[in-house]
Image (cartoon, rainbow, N blue to C red; front, top):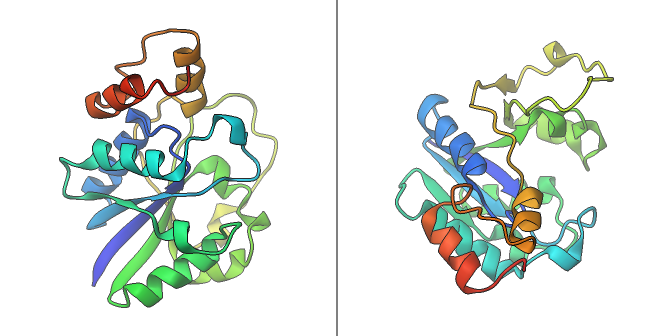
Length: 195
């Protein structure tokens, strides 16, 4: 059974931090592939800075085109909005019954997983690969991860890069070429995105 890790995000834009985490998991976790699931608008994010779905998908495709273990997925584009991870997982299971899916998320997302729709179902039926986030302050909550047997921590390199930083830098005419792969940087530059 093919093992697929699902890395959800708006990827606005996808950057080297995303790719380092995905490649690390594809190489060190037993996953056969990592799919970048490009999510439509997240109601918690500013829509004014969000590029159209097809542009964000195009950038992900450009970023992963030379790595056979990394793929772009537009599965959520055709699902009801808002996108709930549990519904996406069910749709993927129906479409690819011979694949075994797991989730990839940052430790900060794991700490809020209990707020997700049907999170118990997700935790009971899917492995969750968790990568570290760069610490930005004191952790105030205490989640007992030992009670989550399907949670697996990986030691992927942690980088303090964000899509917000990239968008702000481009807006302020700063050079971001080394935070993106060359094809993505050229796409952003030629399309005059985020300026």
